[in-house]
Image 1 (cartoon, helix red, strand yellow):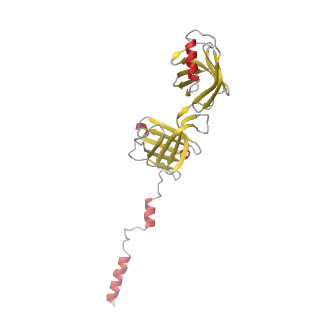
Image 2: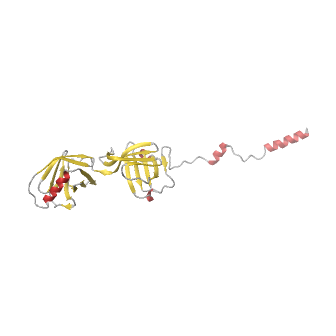
Image 3: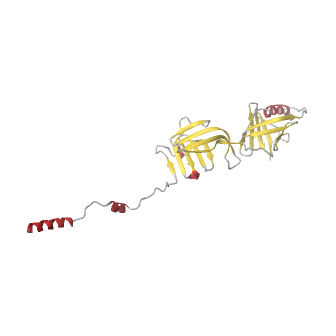
Length: 263
């Protein structure tokens, strides 16, 4: 009996001794404190960026830009990386620029980004800007559409007047004898002493004229040469190039006409 009591006392002493170093799961969690969220990321934001990608500041010159609306998105392609921002800034994806990327028609893939560039013209839907190309981006499985390749002439030339600066690289004499005016459908131009007039149509950056006629006064040089060369150009397949809102260039296989905004 005494032996039994001695054993029981030893066992009780062991059970009531120093607590074990092992913590329960609840105690361990409490000891670690509350979880800290990454402030640079949220549940509504997707950020993909390889640690091997260089920072934007050192990733080279911008090769291409594209934008879209509903929802707002943008794509910037640099020499070493391309950055997509979607859903009005909620989604950000960065991938290496494909080695075969060119600012021309085609499909280019890299990681979670696929970029398809097609012929325009393209309107951004929010302004009067017209872009040279249509762009479709698939970002992490979601596809959006927009425009890229730089802006071209606005979709209208109506009610604008221009002074002629040069024809085929040759400066014209100053004065009212060298001008081009556009109404809603008609174009009137003077490149010396005669008046040209007819109808025009603007499709994106392509300008075409029809029923173009000209008075037939005899003009001294250099007006006669300017009129002849400009008339050939206006009757050809013309491309319109804008430089801001104050300069415009008419280009075709027949030559160039440089214009400066008058009204």
